[in-house]
Image (cartoon, helix red, strand yellow):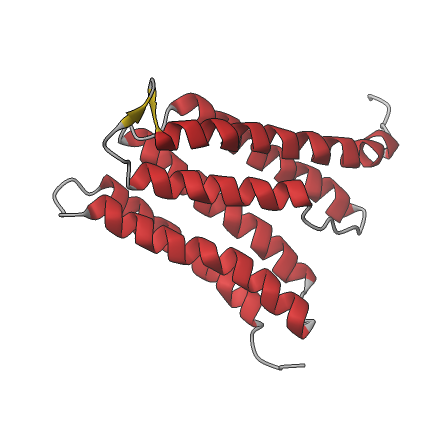
Amino acid sequence: MSRGFPVPDALALFRVAMTIPIMSFIRADRIDHHFAIAAVLFGITSFTDFLDGYVARRTSGGTTLGAFLDTTADKILVTGVLLALVSVDRISIWPASIIIFREFTVMALRGVVAQKGGLIKPSTWGKAKAFTQYVVIILACVRLPDRWGPWYLDQWVMLVAVIVTVGSAWGYLASFWEVIRSEPVEAAK
């Protein structure tokens, strides 16, 4: 086992650090191709989410800190970039709100389990959720000029991302229900 900083942890920290530059390119009005630059940076950054999991599994380099950093970094990246896209009217506030609400709800549920000494691994739904969110963010950055009926392609994919996001939240809620119910309630003083 390596004595240095684990690669998966470094990749998670990279995602956190890249959030601000990506948001800056989305918000930059005067830079040519700023949305394309943001899309490329986001694509590279989001790929590290899959890469750090792969490295952790292959090297047995997964740590409790790494699991926390991984999920927190993803939430910071997605939330920050969604807010930037909302601010420039590339994404509607409603689907972004649903996604952000889900992210914080699941983070809170994971916190409850962590307090009891548990660690919840990502589900298949969670991985599908991350993938669809990453795809929709890239598509919103490089929005195709033609509409597909009433919406642009990225708006249709956003509908899919919201459905998968809600589905993954439901799965987490069902999984954590026993943990939440087993929490002792203290009598009011």
